Picture 1 (cartoon, one colour):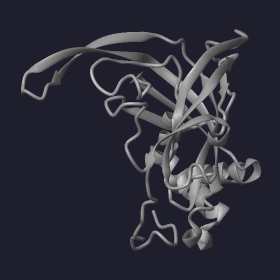
Picture 2 (tube, rainbow, N blue to C red; picture 1 turned 180 degrees about the horizontal axis):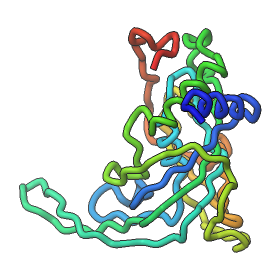
Picture 3 (cartoon, rainbow, N blue to C red; picture 1 turned 30 degrees about the vertical axis):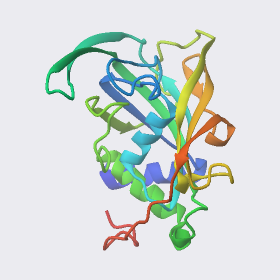
Length: 247
């Protein structure tokens, strides 16, 4: 099957389901809680955070016209960790030793969708499902528009098209596992969904449950949230070729 045929097949599925699916895999990943890991040692959550997977989606393809919403993730490989020592530069010029705990040999199936960003009325004329699904499919097949990583920038990752649920997961048949309250993500001013989150940077938390290896994430507006500080929406300048979706 040619690249164009494969792209057309993906777009047809996206248009039908109004969902995109792909697999992301990496040698290592680190999904840290930003509150307790601002400096020094960092320890990963055992599963991906909503924000980390949303970041993968945005690395594949993103425009201010829409917002990425992650529906669910399927954990494919056994959860394993590895500790690595890091030299951190202190303010006095000396080094400090810290331990980073990474996940190793990770692979996740992702299902997500896009929603038009009602905070960006200036992009109303760009709300074209077919256009954006075409660009996403093309970008996904090329490995993304930006470098893809899982949690931290040293955790380089790779993305490939796949149907969600295909293949065997290590956690098939394991039942329901409650992972407790986890950091979910950050709601930025240009993705505000209420008066409370308008013109603010909001930290979100949510309970996470894995059932047979699948995590269904809560939407940001369903989370427990805490305002960090006030903020303003970013202003974007359209580059030549952006308006018509040239890639």
